[in-house]
Each structure stands twice: as structure tokens, then as C-alpha cells.
Amino acid sequence: MSWLKAAGPLVFIVALAAAFGALYGYAREGAMLALGLLLGLWVYQLQRLQSWLNSSSTPPPDASGPWGEVITRIYSQEKKSREAHARLQSTVNYLQDSFAAMRDGVVIVDNHGVIKWFNRGAEPLLGLRHPEDTGQTLTNIVRSPEFNQYILGRDYSTPLQYLSAGNRQSRYLRVEITRFGEGERLLFVRDVSSEVRMEKIRRDFVANVSHELRTPLTVISGYLSTFLDNVQELPQRYVKPLKQMGQQAQRMESMLKDLLWLSRIESEKREDERERLDIRGLLQELRDELAEAYPDGSIVLELDVEENLYGDYRQLYSAVSNLAINAVKYSPNHTPVTIRWTSKGDNLLLQVQDRGLGIDSVHIPRLTERFYRVDDSRNSATGGTGLGLAIVKHVAAAHGASLQIESKLGEGSTFTLVFPKPAI
Image (cartoon, rainbow, N blue to C red; front, side):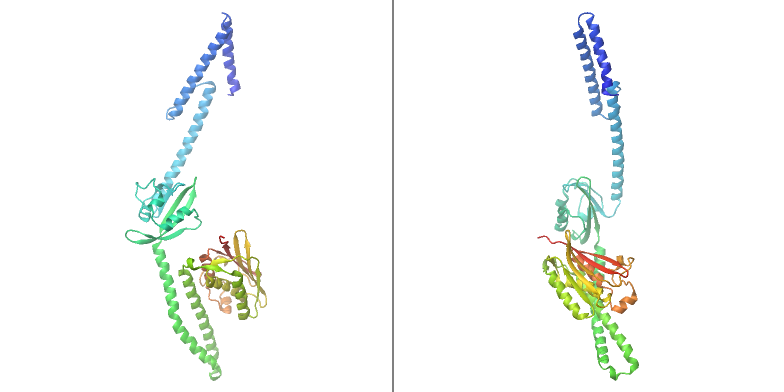
């Protein structure tokens, strides 16, 4: 019913009252009396509506005309709102029940960092107490500088892993944060102490074994070198086996060298000792070294930008050297290998591009795995150790960069280190 249609009966009632009053000479008074009665009726309906809105648990009042339509629409919207709220609350309860059953810690904080809810798993990990700490600021309870800096920094693109010193024992915790709602944050906290210890054992084992193997391998290589220096004095049937042994000994020495270097990169944390690197100078030095080591190769530099990076010179030189050497080895002789230093948006790109054999796309996701081989014959022919791209990946991660690989069979490959531009 529209308000225009609703006004018709009201006008009719006022007109009828005025006509009735006119019979006695009081037309105006009759119209005013009718208007007063109608106004009183509207005030009464407003009072009933207000009472119902203040107590939504009671059924809606009966009314006709425009007020009946208003009440019906309000009741319908209120009913839909209750149903939506019930569904939402059911979802929230389900999620909270799911989070409560998790062994990992889960904490919900608002946009000011105040704790709204947490499960039992978060209590031993973060030192929380239920229910006393609900409503408290999380950074006032957790006394770890790394944790608080991560929370207040509001950059949650990568998880935080830090050493938490507890009352009984220290443990490594990994924290991941997801934003939702109007600034609220959902924290997942996991104890990764066993993973960290196992990784340390693995690194120490690789480093120790590699170190212990160097001495006997040096002795073997020394004797082989002595024999091969006097090959004319050896029986002919021993020459080929000794040369093969020498090649494999050299390959093993390269592998041990790469393993030791990789273990060192993984264990080093030298952010405070990093320096501003002259990337153009580094690439020019690398080109000169490769030109001498691989006279049949062709290195082309394209240095489009002057920007430099903060980092470790030896690590970065090792990473780019691995990429460039691979490109030269897998390219035909005298085919140019382009090393490009350029920028794109907020990133600096260090690219190594070749026109060699190329790599099938099925292999690309696994190229940075240790000892992963695209083709055994290719690695045996080039003398690769299978650790070069693993080294590149770890150096990139240590410098806040990412490694992108593009390749097509028969057309060549492009390896790109993507660095965020350093703050001025």
C-alpha cells in the first residue's frame, strides 16, 4: 500500500467530520477534532512500534493500513537479520570448536591487538592464561622482541620463526598471521623445535661428512695426478681407467666444495655485516673470469641500471657464477649468453639468458632440489654436481630475492633473480 493510497481514507474521514460539523455550524471544529483523533491514533501506533522494537522477543503488534505494512516489513527484515546472525554465529562457533581442537595455537586479536579469543594450544606456546588474558593486549603479554616487532610491523607476507625462551625450556615457534574483518587478525602458532633440530642435524651431518671426505679425496687425487703426470711410464691398459678415476675425483671434489659452501650459506646469518655491492663491477669481473675459463663461450653484458644492492659479495658472486656457467655449458660454442641487470617496477632484475638446449616445463618446479638431474647424460657430460641451483635458491632467499625460471626446449632458458629495490 502506497502512502498516496493511505492518505485517501484520512482525507475522507476529515472531510466527513467537517461536513458533519457544518450541519451545526462547526465545520472547522469538526475537521480539527478528526485530525486530533487521527494524530492520537498515529502516536499510539508509534508507541506500540517503539515498545516492540525495544523488546524484539515479543510478537509484533497487530495493525492495519500503512502502519501494518511498516510493521510487517520491519518484522520481515528483523527475521532475516536474526536468521543471518544465527547462521554466522553457527559458523563462528564451528570455527572456534575446530580451532579449539587444534594442537597448534590459535589467537584472534582485533585491530588494536587486543585478544578476543584463543584456544588451549596457545597457552603453553605464548604463555597465555584463560580467561584472564582475554581482553588484554597481546604484545603486553608476549615478551619476545621478535614477536612484538612482527605483530606491530603489520607485514605478514612471510611467517615469523623465532626462539622463544620459556620458563622450562626454549623452543622455536613459527607464527603465521591472516587478516580478516575490519582489521582483526588470526594468528597460528606452531612449535617447530623438532624440525629446526632435525634440520640442524642434517646440515651438520652434511658439513661434517663433506669435511671428513676432503682429506682422503685429496690423497687419492694427489696420487692419481702423480700417475697421470708420468703416463708414458704406465702400461697402456691402465691409462684410460686412471684418467676416468681422475675425472671422477675432480667431480667429487667439486661436489664436496659445493656441499660445504651450501651448508655455510644455510647456516650463516650476517645481515649486520652486509655491504653495498657494486653489481655492475661484479658482473664485469665475472665476465672476465668466464672469458678466460671458457674461451669458446660468449658473455654479453646488458647493464641498464646503476642501482646497487646490499648483501654478501661472495654469495651473490657464487649464485650468478653458477647460473652463467650452466648457461655456457649448455649452449653451443660461441653462442652468446646474456647477463642483464635491469629494473621492472619496484624490483631489480638480474637475468642470465642462454640460447641452449632448454628445459622441459615438467622439470622446472624441481630444478632447485639438491642433486636433481634433468638428464643424467647431460650432467655427466658437463661435470655438474646437481647443487648449483640449490645454491642459487638459498643465496636468493638470503638476500630477500626470488628465483624465476623460464625455458623452452630448443630455444634456451632465462634465469631471473628478482630483488626488491633497497630503501634509499
